[in-house]
Length: 283
Image (tube, rainbow, N blue to C red; front, side):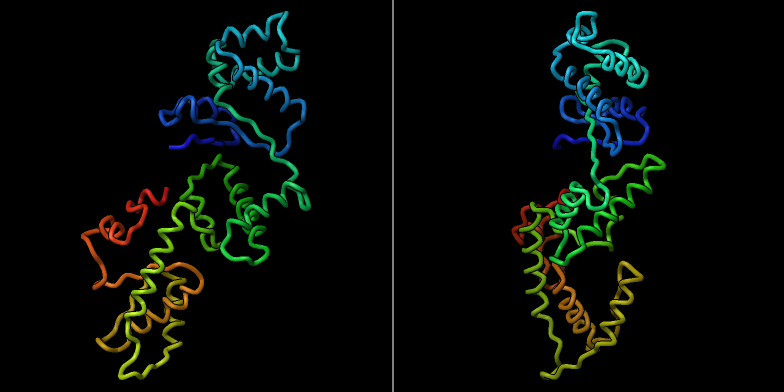
């Protein structure tokens, strides 16, 4: 697993507890905070403590900076003393370990017309499907709302939980490492659609009201079943609906007589997908 920077808030007392978790990998993971409003002097002093710890192979060398002849000024000494109860370190070695795994960032200039805000929105626009203007701003506003709602109870989000909150607001691009697989699945689905007949003796009956019904039911339910007597046109309705939504993005269309293998792994392998584990694809 790639190193992670884990951000918690707003309580600073979560930070030492975070580093004590079994899931926290020393030497790889980081914990810390991102803040918008902080004085330059305070942030500069904190980062100096972090830099000194990173540059100190031992706690004794870190401690030497605070000796009467050391490099630490009153600001560094005061901040160190103020943070000791929060960190819970009983000696300089533990302080060094904590600071080496700690990060602190200021993320300001986010007000309207701010340079950083514009840059963030432009970057978010690149993650949204389509070129429609304003989608980056919409995604930015959604993320800000989620952060505000979660700030009151120190909420944490995983990729899955965050995507679930964004679902329906914007359409995000596929992860780069899954792009080939998505294109392959979409091509397979379109091929399967082509073999579904929607005519009887070359006669086609358009059923727009049924297409509308399917759309309306999908807005209310995650799964919709199309039922009816044999030959009534169930497959034709499904095909036409699938063709319509395929114009907006990739689809997955499965037809029983075109399935191979005894499960998803074998089926995915038969299509030449690079990721055959559905759970791993979501990570």
